[in-house]
Image (cartoon, rainbow, N blue to C red; front, side, top):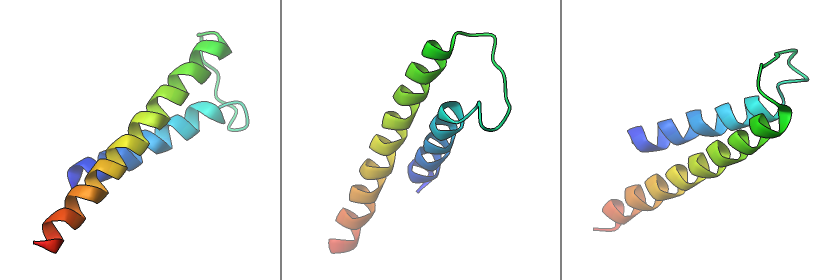
Length: 62
């Protein structure tokens, strides 16, 4: 369950990094670095949510 919650947090962080200009947040890093890191965090968050989802439903079937 905690893995799924952390996955949602990672997804939110990735979306925050993608839309930081619209939220009027400035970083000292280059925009390309911020977008690449945001994509990595977003994909990792999706991976954790899917993994947690499968684990929860595999225990439910037993």
